[in-house]
Length: 262
Image (cartoon, one colour):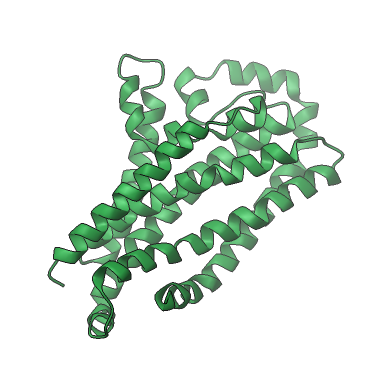
């Protein structure tokens, strides 16, 4: 039981380790920059106020002269919301299509493994980087803020990471749907990145407009690091919406894959 999860998880271990180290180092650099940003606070806040509202909302630019606002803007909105979302869509896109392209899937399906089990356990293996990053990074972020004598709520930092898990699962699910629809891994991976980025743009561009309802189609609408860190506001309902969306997309992938000729 769960042999596929273990095997696929081991395959992702090296990449996960490298990504965790990169994100951790980047977090240290961002926190290390904050004292100089704090010193330039008056001019920086005036500059932020001059930016378009859609840009400020899209990148969660709020209270940037505080450690919470600075981290949410420069680290969580950019790295966690955008780059990791794109990465998980990319990883999901190659999950099945990659094995189809190399012919490995034929060998796997020749064993007594159902397609449903294969798709579910392959998806569960995508949880490995998500859990690892969300276990290590909050410790790095909190520890580095303490090191520069800044105060930040550890509960809020944990909440940012816990509530990001449903968001990242949805991004992985988007990639997985494309992975079972096409047989070329690069096409599924690029498609996953394009869809997640397009949804991010739609949510940002339609904010405070008559078309704001379109942003409800984007997973970014339901996960806002700035609200968590700056306002200590936790959108639990949004997280539940993302969990349901991830489950629905996984069920769609399973249904398509069971009927697909590979």
